[in-house]
Length: 246
Image 1 (cartoon, rainbow, N blue to C red):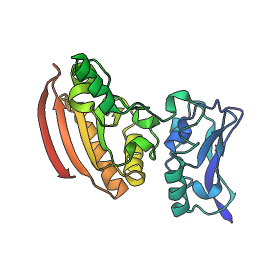
Image 2: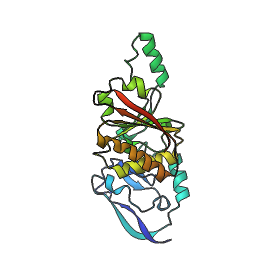
Image 3: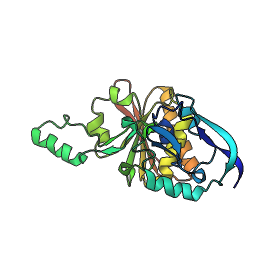
Image 4: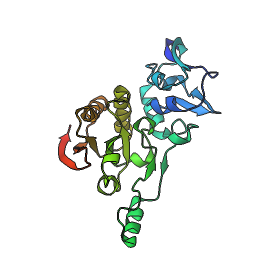
């Protein structure tokens, strides 16, 4: 062991919200007995991606005697861990869930004569910052990365885009873009996502979602087939292009 930087969690301040656990791509933090805990020194890289996520200021970086960070061990842990650290983190809103297969919902719509009635959403959560990189619904998936405003503008979003696809939503203007890049990169590294469709509004700031997607691929060291869909303020798909392996 040697002195190095590592996460320290103040249990008195921690309220067990689980945001730090979902922010940690290495799965170094779990919620146990309603409090965030460091699973193992070897899983913590000491870079502090979790710091900005804690609303209680319960996390800090300290220097102490600790086992060296083991990147390969952390990667294996996180891959098998979509685990208690992120799925059963004590926050119901962050726990991964998969619903009835979407094809069944679609068949029910056809049978009822109303193809627009049933929700196509097949999992939870949908907020990018809350999705576990190793969540089961990401395996071999054609992932949608959607700007928050799109489903409000696009009346047929479920029927046209969401059918049989997992989705993560984010706002490139109001959210922490750097955190989104890190989380999406972790998803690309740790899951077997096959393709990525970025759906954003026509307003200039919303195109920042494309930059997040490209930076995440560069950070992950992995590119996937990509598509860019632009939605007008009136909810129409005004541009759709395949960008290849961006």
